[in-house]
Image 1 (cartoon, one colour):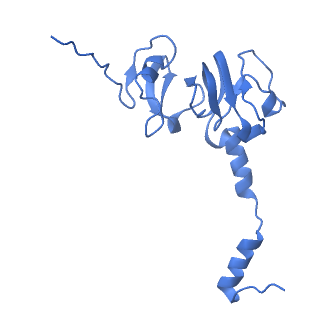
Image 2: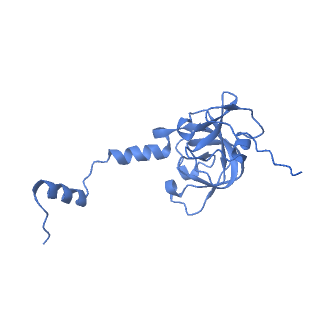
Image 3: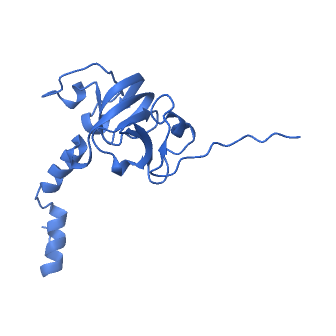
Length: 173
């Protein structure tokens, strides 16, 4: 008689699950954290839940693992050889080793905030747990996006298109 491997039951969206070791560790092993809706295991009010990244709020505790996008600005609580590619924010050409030391980040450049990981960056090695400190437009990348959206300049191509629509094609000498 052949024995069939028992597949663990996967938690559903919004379902509370018991905490086993690190936050979300069993959910990550079950393969449900990075699904179509970018589901994430979070510890909220002492209970583990599986929620979309878009529902994260400051105070949620999340697990960061290699290959994942950081879903919010977070302060690291635990880190095991954690390295993050934050080149989109800082231009650094190599991933940054992250630490859990308490630091006063007020006024520090993003590149110098070694105990933080930022929304839109990627975990390239290691793992860690972190507490969400900012989401949406309150994140570093959100603030950059709002600043860019507020810039009201007309690039030459846009001006040419506007002129073409209003009064004919532009001519170049």
